[in-house]
Every structure is written in structure tokens, then in C-alpha cells.
Amino acid sequence: MKHNMAHSRIYHIYQGVKQRCLNPKNPSYYLYGGRGISICAEWVDNFQAFYGWSMENGYTDEMTLDRIDSEKDYSPRNCQWISKSANSARVQDRNGTPETIAARKELKAKGKIGKTSTEVKRRYNEKTYKRWFADLRNEDFDRIEALRGEQSRAAFLKKVVSLYEKNLAE
Image (cartoon, rainbow, N blue to C red):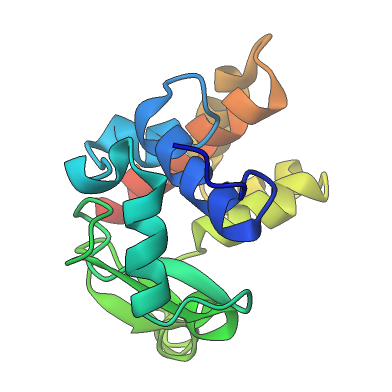
């Protein structure tokens, strides 16, 4: 069915969800489909159903799609439209418990948690990652450098974040 919305923001959001959940070649697949996150049968091949739900549930061009439970699929029961600022203020701890960034910063200041994966990415992108990783532990730094090899920057970054998050869980 033609919907004449192929260039709309909402259609790009819909396609992005499908790509992250269903396309193993998508760079973000490992965070979604690779973890078992999918898109419900009602939406998977039916943009009109997704669009209808969106219009009934507060979509505007200023909103962003949010999964209420980050361990569950994209579906009408698990999604909501929220402001970009509200969405960026939400983070998940290792157990999937929602926290605010302010609460996370407070825990970090008290030494209760380490650096976030966002900090790893930011510092790596600023090319200061070698110096920063040195303040982890020497053995971690050596393991991380050994991981890079001939890998692309994106593949290396995925491994760095994975190793970092694994160390947080220990």
C-alpha cells in the first residue's frame, strides 16, 4: 500500500527500527536484533499500523520513540513517544533498571560505578583512548590494544565497549 511518506521523519524512524532489529549488516544490529530485540508482527510489514499507533500516542516531530523496557521488543505495549531531552536523560544500569543521568553521575562521584560506554566512545573518538585506557588497569589496556589488530574502527569500538561492559559486570 502506498503511503506517500517515504521521506517523512516518522517513516525513517520506522525503517530504522526494522533495520536495527532485522538486518545483521546494520551497524546497530548487535545492540538490538543481535540481543533478541525485534519488532512486533503487527508493525513489521505494516507502516500504516505503526503510523496509526504513533498518531494516537503523541507522535510529533519533536518526539523520539522509546522502548519502556529496553529488554523487550518494539510493540504498542512497550513503546512510547517521549521528548528527546527526556529520552537522553534515561540510561539503563547493568540490570536494566532505569536511572537518570544525574543519579548515575552521583554514583560515579561516589566511586560506585566506572566510566560509561558513552564516555568510552567519546574519548575514543577524540583519539585520547590510549591515555584514558591506561588509567583502567595495565592488563586491560594491553588486552584492548591487542583486540584492534587490522579491524575497522567501528568493529574495534564494539569490542572495546563490550569488554568495558563485561568488566563492569565483574
